[in-house]
Amino acid sequence: MLEAADLACTRGTRRLFEAISFLLPRGEVLRVRGENGSGKTSLLRILAGLSPAAHGEVRWNERPIRRQREEYAAEMVFIGHSNALKDDLTAAENLRYGLALAGVAASRVQIGDALAEEGLARAADLPIQWLSQGQRRRVALVRLAFCGARRLWILDEPFSGLDRAAVTRLAARMSMHVREGGVVVYTTHQEIDLRLPARDLDLQ
Amino acid sequence: MSAGLASACLAIVSGDLRLAMRRRADVLTTFFFFVIVASLFPLGVGPEPERLREIGPGVLWVAALLASMLALGRLFSGDFADGALEQLALSPEPLSVLVLAKVAAHWLGTGLPLVLIAPVLGVQFDLAGRALWALTWSLAIGTPVLSLLGSVGAALTLGVRGGGALTALLVLPLYVPVLVFGAGAVSAAAAGMEVSGHLSVLGAMLLLALVAVPWATATAIRIALE
Image (cartoon, rainbow over all chains, first blue to last red; front, side, top):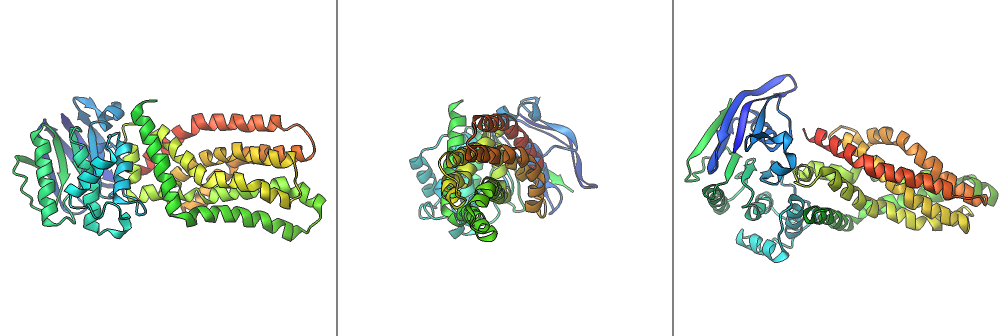
């Protein structure tokens, strides 16, 4: 499924990492670890196809992702460091906007239900700027509830800022996705037991 | 156009317009900039109708051009800062079409109000009848071209310090042909001449910009995100 072949990344004159290779088949999780500044976010952006690699290439179903941008985008969800939420729109409006952009059909009622399930029923009609950082992160992550059909999830620090209950729910959601044959790549500082055989990639 | 693309474009237009409604101050700034700049000239150059009629087309067009440029800074910078631009670039739909939807929403929020108020300001310059008609139509065709051309500059200067001034330097030379034919149409109408030629050239510019610009802007956005 997802394959990285000899990836390298440079920032300015500094080489962040090199010779990163892995093959992630269906139903596997890759946890990317490393100190601040070790290039975790850069690696994820390369895997998502946002940045080009200084060397090597990323393949999805054995084809380079840059040759199949639209097919790849239709099978992938990327939740980056920033939440992609508009301060002046409500949580529900933001989700509707984001999902329509991603080409995922979701009705108003489904979005309301998904927010309620995440414990954000009261926040659904509030502008994002009134929510706390953790709540904003949770709103961004609610997108995953609609993206079960997308095989590949790329999540940059998904657990940061979440309370314990939210961490448990997210871990359960990721586990379920993997058990259904999905692939998850994520970065984290925390030790979170997904109860799954996770592969680790340590960036120096 | 596939259903996914149509719903993505619709979401962008309605979402961006809703945002514009919630941040009304931004829209009003552009609008009143145009109104005030255009109103300063009659006060500055004196009330002789002949002179006002003569400078009116150029002044109104330059004021509209500057007002539309003033709004460019907001076209992508918010999306760039909050990560929405990444999601736009990662959409399975073609980025150039999504960019077109963003520019359309931007024009509805900033360009269209200028077009609608222009005839009222034209009266200050003693323009009447056909000249007002030509002013409205030339702005209606010309301001979308300004928004489209400006989107390239706005995308190229994403993440650059002092991007606003740089956008102006990049974009103003590109605005020249639009200004020449736009103001030319109004002058011609005021002199009682045929304006369909000027408007046709503006229309051709709009078609050309519709084809070429979204692609260039999409490429600039991808480079900015790297």
